[in-house]
Amino acid sequence: MRKLLPRLTNAVNKEIDRNRLSAIYFLFTDGVLTYIGKTTDLRTRITSQKSVNNFDSFRFIECNAMHLDYYERRCIRMFKPVKNRWHYPNITDKELRIS
Image (cartoon, rainbow, N blue to C red; front, top):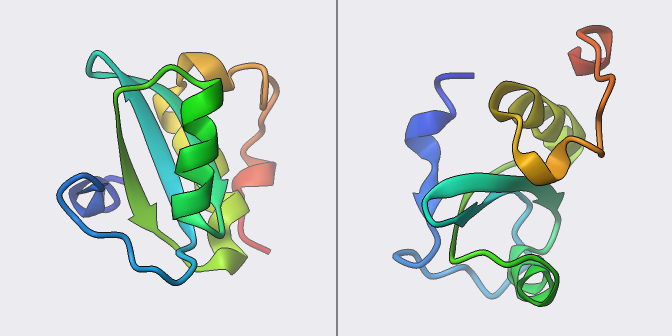
């Protein structure tokens, strides 16, 4: 999992391709990670999150759509963002395995 951290990309400094981009995204408020989500269309998802979540920056990891569920669960379990706790309150190691 630590290998993922260097791949975090600041979306403000990188133009998101106009095509759909599958990714795990991380929302930050005042420098604190508050939410982790998955999407198959990053640009649209971040735009819609702006109206729901109060965040001031985000980062993302580009990810194959087949593996979005797995990596989202792994990241939530590792970082435990405040707004994700109700999503996966009883996540188990068994659920984190790739089939």
